[in-house]
Length: 65
Image (cartoon, rainbow, N blue to C red; front, side):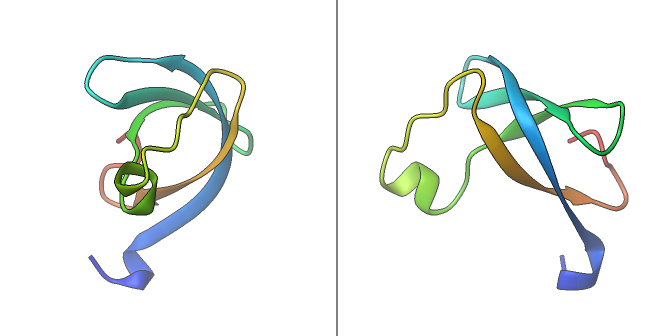
């Protein structure tokens, strides 16, 4: 995936799911997506709780995941 294939948007964590997955409500779109923590968020075991404001990267081909 290249930098051109990614859309960055802000959202709010609605629910924490099993297996490191999260339900996120996007601010700019009326959409709720399923996302996961990656990179340094996993490496340093940073906790994400409901109500946190996060920035997510969406793939242009599958914007709901």
